[in-house]
Image (tube, rainbow, N blue to C red):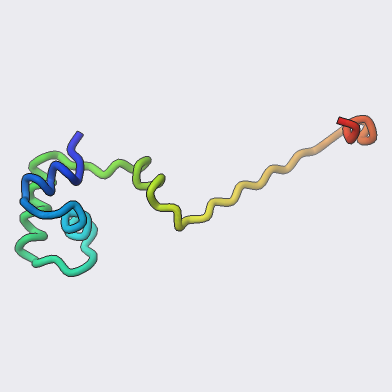
Length: 79
């Protein structure tokens, strides 16, 4: 599995530059960005969705749990 580090080593740039080039963010020389994208395609790079989800903690996920309790509520409250 190809990583950003592998692409950065092949391109002779930093991991941050590879990240910015692949996501079309920040200031990256257009020729360098195209070279990085070509390398990524050539090296069969695919972003790992699970890893990016762990890194991106800016998202807030909300989970709701709705329980329908039947029976003796007094008995359930003791425990």
